[in-house]
Amino acid sequence: MFANIIDGRSIALQVQQDLLPRIAALKARGHPPGLAFVRVGEDLASKVYVGRKEKACADLGIYSKTHVMAEKTTEAELLQVLHRLNGDVALHGILVQSPLPSHIRSERVYSAVNPDKDVDGFHPVNMGKLVLGDTTGFIACTPAGIRELLIRTDIKIQGTNVVVLGRGNIVGKPLAILLCQKQKHANATVTLCHSGTRDLKAHCLRADILVAAMGVPEFVRADMVKPGATVVDVGVNRVSDPSAKTGSRLVGDVAFDAVQKIAGRITPNPGGVGPMTIAMLMQNTVLAAERASGRET
Ligand code: NAP
Image (cartoon, rainbow, N blue to C red):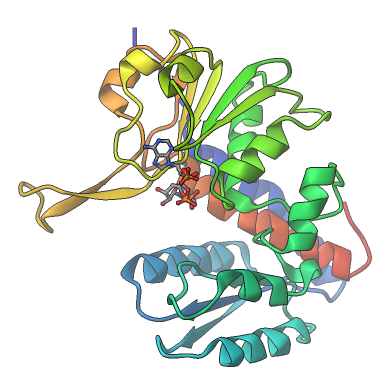
């Protein structure tokens, strides 16, 4: 028996299709949604990610504008650009692509984005609202996308044991908080594992839903998965592969071929969580525009 594949690409497409009438309504009222991207430096992966997000905007008819800044940009210069974007009424969302050069403090940068335009959900106000269960904030796109994948594939979250591997601020920690909320499509018992966790495998084997967000290539093996469990692979890792044209290839945090034989449902990688992250960014941008125009759906 092989696990059912959770098709992130087609679910992301559905999410984006659902946004079309909302975008049309905003335009009809004279409030076309707008999203600013800020990219600092020439990191290749960042270029690819911003390019995909720009394309999603273009496909949906969301206005977007990209600011490319040199690697040597100072923190003060970047903050100045964010200040200007915060005041631009045509832009409802601002996304600063990570990673930032090491001389720039990402916490300072995320805190400088107006929380009402923080469609990435990294501002302390939005993180705080998530912790408090206040739904008026923005939820970080990857955790929001993972929850949406589960909802749209009818995977029950309520009452299940969820194990999240990795306590990063962008994925693991906000996801753990999101899924343990006393709310619809949540209310799970969540275990958050990290490098200090003892007997990590024993935790994994108790998971009804196992989410790997560590950045460790193929860390989750078949003997770590409860038969029939749902496995969500968030990791994006470049590993060397002499047989590949480029000498390397991307793998997830899950040993897909082996785990697929044990799991009930599994996300492919690529084609699982990645497209959902972009779809949720589009959704947050539309929501930000609706809030700015004084009407939420
Ligand atoms: P991060 O901030 O570096 O966090 C990694 C976490 O994994 C840390 O909590 C770390 O533990 C834990 N960890 C690392 N090695 C471990 C080990 N051997 N055993 C147990 N725990 C371990 O990373 P992130 O930003 O959350 O990203 C995680 C992965 O998701 C990366 O591959 C990233 O590229 C990918 N990602 C994908 C998307 C997408 O849309 N598909 C979006 C964002 C990120 P400590 O805290 O103890 O150090």
